[in-house]
Image (cartoon, rainbow over all chains, first blue to last red; front, side, top):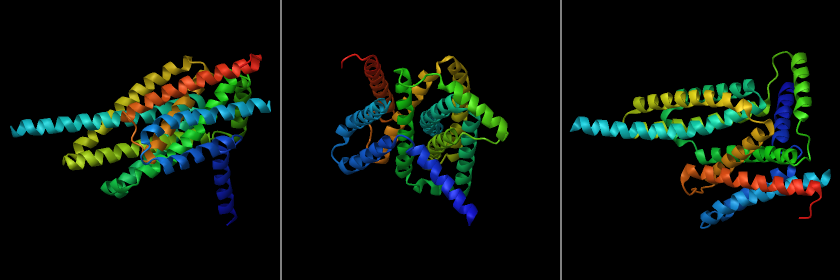
Length: 71
Length: 249
């Protein structure tokens, strides 16, 4: 049992560091973006094709300037 | 006439399987070369090896039943992970290019890695490189398998379709080996920025497809996404440099 718990913890920590790490804002913005896209995809596919990359770039900009402010 | 019909039908099948396989394998190759060049080839190849084993096991175990896999769900999961990972890389590359982060902290990382490797023997693996290479090859490989099964079964020429897919994969691999050698002369931060742009582009593309968005121009939309992200990243670097130098925005 101890081995299974250890492996599960290591697995969870790996994904936490991989996806969240020191940039939780990127993780949250991508999840939020996917939820919004899933909700509004019907009838707005053309708009989403343009909006998706722009919103992703805006999230990146927010994360970069958050890092700059913290220095 | 019959011979002519068979030849035409086979030619169309060969062309379709060749193009579909080439597109998917170039996508997988891009990820593997990028990850291998920046994080280390050993872990990247291990990821590729495991993905090929998993694909072989899947095809052996399920065969045509693979056509029922919800590929869009898989695209959404893999796309989300690549998108987050790619954004993390782009963020670091922008901070380095604008001078907010040291460009040469790789030297310290390299020294630490060498020290860790010499202590731990040869069993250390770069998990990020391994997982990214595995997912890229597994997803693209699965798409090739599904394409071959779909086109090959419907044309009643599954063996021919399979051989075309194998030959195309080998061809793309040879091209990849040649291209990978040229990449060693590219500056590291520029390479990491390019990898970040590519991962974010693939991530956006797959997330969109996974959510049911049919991109304008199909796979060609990837080039447009990459172009948009390159320009966006360049603008962010210029703004960040100006902030560092105290230039009013």
